[in-house]
Image 1 (cartoon, rainbow over the protein chains, first blue to last red):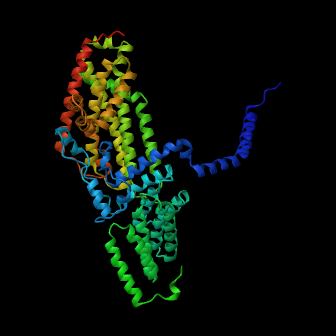
Image 2 (cartoon, helix red, strand yellow):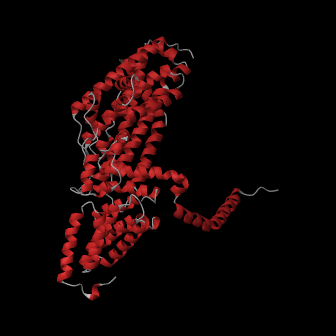
Image 3 (cartoon, each protein chain N blue to C red):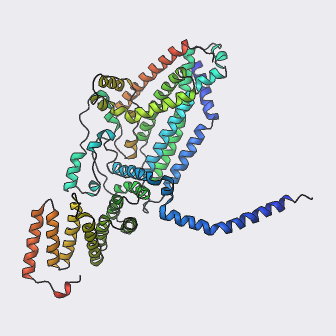
Length: 289
Length: 259
């Protein structure tokens, strides 16, 4: 039998490659769909990715403090939660955080004293637009653990602060797709609509939904997230006040007062609103709800 | 001195011939460039994550180069029996140790310089700032630290039987010191006696390599180090290098060269 020419074999193999490619292409698209629903990282790491997600979230916090952060040996002094990452100077969270971050005691010996020259020893927070530096770590953390709600709210807060409102909205929607019952993400989304888009109707709808979600998840709990509840109720109350719905606003602020660490200040606002109701009854058309 | 320099030249040439450095440099460059091409929320000004990743890779690569290059020096000479003609030159055993140390340390320095130039270019092109003095301090401190590591591995290479076991043990020891060395005094205070005193003694005995890790200062654009502190850290490292080389010389002098 005559041996076929090498060029003929090459063309034949190319034809086989092409045929296999046309056969596999639709299936590869299906693989991609599967990848989207679970992500490649989920397939590779399984539930172990949550550990890495936590590491990257902490990395964002370290970056936020420009490297000044307690080690594993100072964990009892490590900041709890993520509220300090979105707290401005003078706020109660920030003052509490300032106390937590005072973890460096007096040096115990000359080695420790000298070693401090080579490390960051001052507690500062990023400012002046440098807050953007925490965003990559938060993005990676969200990819690794889409169910970690803090990641979305903290990133969206700083994205809004940096003027990247569209990116913040997209990220919050992504968070909401992954955590449809999160009142924290809904609250942050409402703030975005209210403060950045000045869209009162959408903000109200989102905050009302956040309030319902909060009641659905937290109301029966022993240690309910009262701080978040107060924030939702107060913000919604102010929105209603702005819209002229004073009765609704009073009702919401009264709810918030029960959860507030500083009820006296809220009571003053409630009294003020009640006076407004007496002076000027709300117009009938303003009851848009 | 010429003998020591000639011996060190051989080590440097060996590093240039081997592919370890090239592979590690290409890996570092590729990973850094790929990470640099990722778009996070459409913000091109974000740079610190890239500096963080790049410096981490540089530290890992430098440690791998230092430990693997040093660990095989004396065992390879013994295995191939080239140690006998070398010592017959005449070259003393002390000169062999000094030559090997100098060669490995200079080779590490050359590799580190290439890495830091790459880091400087990447960082400067994104950040548009060029804190050369800070980069020089970071480079110098890391190179000084590598001197101690090379000394430790040389000592290990005359104590342990195989280069692989020496490299593995020294990797664990060096990473352990960098990660935990700073906190050993805290741990010691929480231990009952006599364990507490023992841990505190270890704390004072180990070379504090973690001092030389000033990545945070570079990544987060913190203050430049004082030159006096850099100088004192260099003296501290030099003292440890001298002690380690002396100990290596003592062990090597009594060691049989036949396998």
